[in-house]
Image 1 (spheres, rainbow, N blue to C red):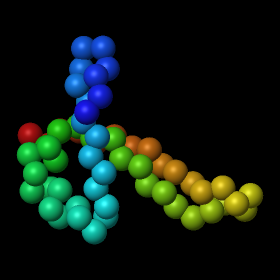
Image 2 (cartoon, rainbow, N blue to C red; image 1 turned 90 degrees about the horizontal axis):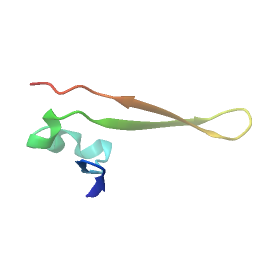
Image 3 (cartoon, rainbow, N blue to C red; image 1 turned 120 degrees about the vertical axis):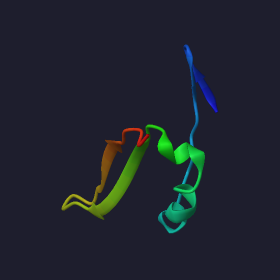
Amino acid sequence: MAEITTRAVRVLDVPRTDMASFFEMPESDQVRVYYLFGAETDDQRIQCYIGRTHATR
């Protein structure tokens, strides 16, 4: 957990194989930031997409 000014931020590392278990946790209903890593580009760099979800409740 990290303190950022007036907020407490939690970081959870959830492998794709554990997503079903994660969605059973209460934390899964909160706003989340996620990273998707993909194939290398022509110049050998790995692509990364950064997304944000909204709370579901």
